[in-house]
Amino acid sequence: MSSIVFNTLESCFPRSVNYRSGEARPAVHEASAPFRSFAYRERHIQCLWADPRHRPPKLKTSEGEPIEVEFPGDWNLEAGPDFLNAVLLVGKEQRRISGDLEIHIHPNGWKQHGHANDPNFANVRFHIVYFQGLEIPGLVQVPLQEILSTDPRFSFDNIDITAYPYSIPVGDFPLREMDPDQKIKWLKSAGEERLRQKAERLALATQSKEPGQVLWEELMAALGYKNNKAPFRQLAATLPLARLHVLAETPDEAYALLLGLSGLLPANPDPAWPPDTRKFIRSIWDFWWKQPAALKERAQGKSAWTLAGIRPANHPVRRLMAAAHYAFQLPELTLTKFKPNYWNTHISWKAKCKPTALVGQSRANAIITNILMPFQAATGATELNLKKLPPEPSNRIIRQTAHTLFGPDHTPKVYRSALARQGLIQIFHDYVITHRLDELRKLI
View 1: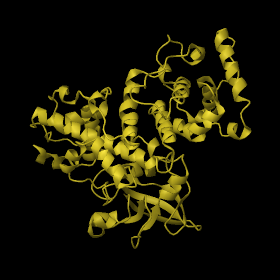
View 2 (view 1 turned 120 degrees about the horizontal axis):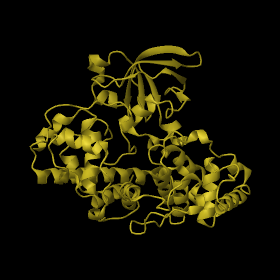
View 3 (view 1 turned 180 degrees about the vertical axis):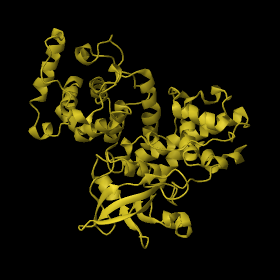
View 4 (view 1 turned 90 degrees about the vertical axis):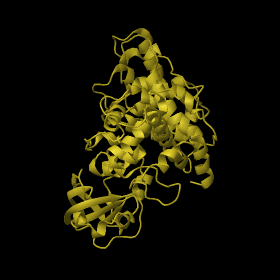
């Protein structure tokens, strides 16, 4: 990312520097430059390594030897290596090597963190890194950048890093005595830092993709919410926005393409469906079957989707209709134009409910705050009206972090605004799950 883009992000989120200047930089921020070519955290790599659903199967060492993961190791929540007792099969002859495993973004993190002289790391045999670089003698080094950058199925964006093990610190609530006005000010600066980091990640993405495609993929992932983020993002990659606009002239045609590629298009209309529903499904099939065989061969299977327990309002067939409408508003979609689309009763076979918004207001607020606002900063905006950000509903992380920082008797008024809630999420990642709460006492 150029220094021009970095300075633009700083102007969009001017208070973010207040958060960073009062923060002892966490270990995950390993690059020395003021802007990085990796906009994620070490925890993303930890989650990817621990979960075979996200971990690429064809890994190689830095010397090109194939790797098979027999056991990724036990996730270590205490001091020491990231994973204990891992077992990897290395090379064509599958040499069975066991030992502890450490993860860094850059290989030089091993030296920067002083692991070589730390007895807790004496049994480390594996070094998992994102970037290729200088190897550490005695360690099997596995770089991830090449395979992750070439295969969209294995994306850090699909990982919910809060769904994996972390320990919750207990103690004496380090910021309990902080002045209420200072709490609000600090939380808002942390919120701006969170949005700045999101904008930085989007700006990096636009270096290899068209801005409209970046926004399309982000919007699709947001429509998939937590349970179906990965298949939605995969759909956006399979049917890029530019290709969709070539194949479809209307939202209904776009919906036919997306529903066909999703593998969720019903094979036959149910006789119990109303006549208009059966007619609509036939029109979808009439458009879908005419598509090129090469496109239809890339359709996903139903197994790619998490459908059990999904509320009708969040069902993929409903959200895909919203995506079909939004596709004709991108990349010109702005904060003022973004509104929930309304339910098309023709597709009520999957949701027996009264007509309502395809995208609820809370999800729309999340999209505005987490995608559209950072995207504007990432694509050239020099000033944003952050006061108009709509607040997302309070969630477990927001409440848990506020309790951890301020104690059980704190007032929720300190995190009523959208920025303050974003700030609590940022603090959760920077301090709570990284065991760095003691560093916050200096803020009082």
